[in-house]
Image (tube, rainbow, N blue to C red; front, top):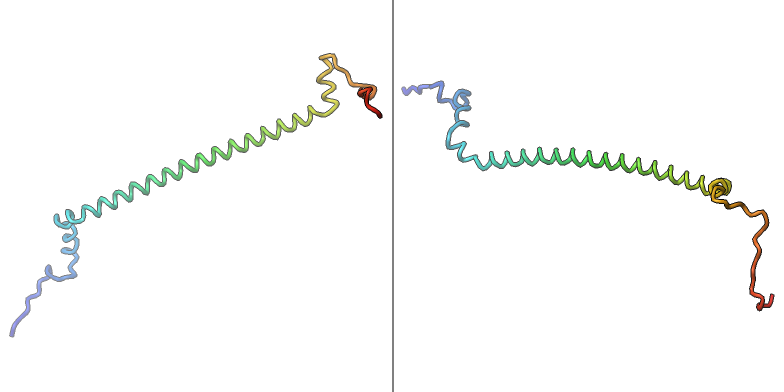
Length: 115
């Protein structure tokens, strides 16, 4: 009868030996391009996150500036409309010595023309 000798350390499913195969020098050297690729992807991922944050800050600042400009436009427009009223114009030109006409304007025409 032949007896098979069972060795605990040579089993394919032995967890003590499984983790050691990942640390072999040849395996590490063989996978250096993959590690560099993963590192590059990581750097690009982080850079993209920073770029997105920066872009969001710029968008928010531009939006805030646009709102301020809209408020300023509305204020200036309101002031122009208020100052262009006839009563306000009269008050504005009074210090210059100009007065409102009481009589309607006189039409001057060419005397050679037949009416």
